[in-house]
Length: 445
Image: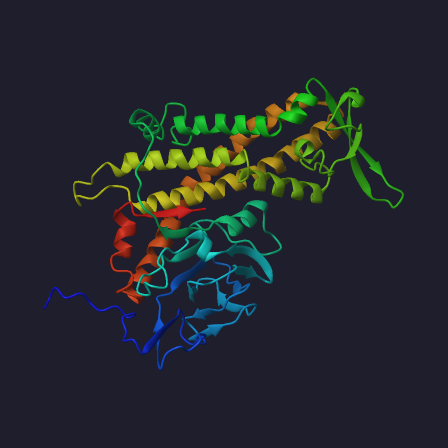
């Protein structure tokens, strides 16, 4: 009798019709075709928001199209109805398998991020398997220890990006194995070791290769205007409009008639056409747009090459650590949470570096153009951007090591995993242990 298979909740007699819902309190929608009706509650997807920035701020979550269930409040929440929670409070939501649209995370009515649970991780179990459990979505935004929380009127570009981007999505993935040749994998696995160049362990071989890849991506993304303006210069000139407003013009040397991209000789400094070159120097609005555009371009098109390389080296270094067994525990020295936190934090740093580099280059251009009153060679902008990017990257990486940001993220995800295991032990049996020791869970930016 012990080998008998447990009957499925969908196995019913011929006079019984089965329909499914995903959340408590959901309306039952079906066309009755049989005398009896059985309603089956399928297992939902858990979504956990865990924000700890130490600011005491309030946040809201709402959905665009579908309702969801608040475990805290014990009822369904309709679309476009915000549900509030505080900084430091863990918000646990349930979403249906048929959930459509996005979950919108906001602060003071301003959109911070949007998540599509069923697109991040399309659930493969169909309606014929209501007992299958969709993988959870954990959104963790943490302030690393030692980092001060600024008020809303004092927030810097880097703090804005930290709040907007420091997010981890945890989902179940299949380990397909690395397809990279062992020799290449070993090369990058050992590339994160300390070098004689820098005893702070920031400037490693992989770090230097990352800077070369970044410089190559920058050159390829901007090759049109770099080629067109090769050997030319530009001036930054301040003028006063009739209204009394001070504006800055960018004046290019050379014959504009033979140019295809920059056909004019004079542009406003915050003109989108020259924003990549001047970084909006001279106006706060121009600098803000340049910083935001630089951040967005980092995650799109050619910019994604640098992201892929960064993730690849993170994985390679992690595998090198994972292969080492701790003699005290008999387990790998590095857990999957180490990989997840490393990748997540590095993605944040890439965005911050792009924004801060744009701000720094705007300041450099303004000082060079107005204080030195000299024409700025295009080559100076290109080389300067590459050098300042490396300097900013070094500073951010050093700060990350000092603040131990990865450890903060790792702790947050581990706590969320433990919470889910305790809350729903039958659904997440071994989940927290899995995130600590086995390569079965991954991260999606």
